[in-house]
Image 1 (tube, rainbow, N blue to C red):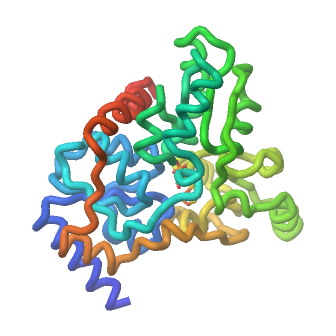
Image 2 (image 1 turned 90 degrees about the vertical axis):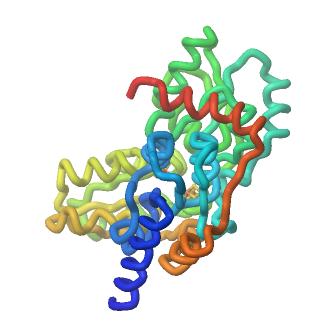
Length: 307
Ligand code: 13P
Ligand code: SF4
């Protein structure tokens, strides 16, 4: 595709000119993921890269909460997102005021929030988590606070899936990922009928009955590792559809089958708007300093925990 190749070269040249890096989430389209992403990965991996990066400018090829997380961790850098409308149904399910009410109702319990939240929510949080470390963080927080219950918000399904793996009690919220909640047990049954040898991998943002019907559950990075290390003959990825397209090239012997659900927010990011973002230094993501300071404690505490 000559037009795409030209845009990719233009973006890569602009990156040098601006001293910028592009942090690309696993749900970006393959031309972004492979063509211009300097760091690619899951939410946890991108947050760690944002903290380490030496570049002056970070372009977040992902959604708004990811850009806010980068800004929280790197207040001295300019953080840009190519489309300010790239939101997330989980992040918009809860506000900082909601968290303050939850804390009043359950005083003394640690508040763990999924990174898929706004800076305002992170500022009310004791420690953040991602789908890659949620069980570990729940158990760490229960021990640290000396309690047998914790607050884990806002993803109801992640909370239930974590609850199935620990004896720590979980107080949840009713947020959902609009992409992962669309998968059904029937989807998996249909895949198993059509390809009995296919291995089914699902993201923990899916409803619990989906995870029970799957062979493996893990974050986008954990699913990638599973496929790259075990190289199953056929695989079904119960997650955003671009994941399969992005891994395919590295494991040509694996056949990817299954339903395709796209995240409309992730898909707002395109090569064109990444180019415009670097050209015009738009759209800057900022977080008020007092809020950022409190949110940083919660994100940094997660990053500092041993793997
Ligand atoms: P990971 O943390 O597994 O990358 O997934 C989070 C997600 O859904 C991003 O939107
Ligand atoms: Fe949010 Fe779901 Fe889209 Fe991830 S896939 S950004 S959790 S709506």
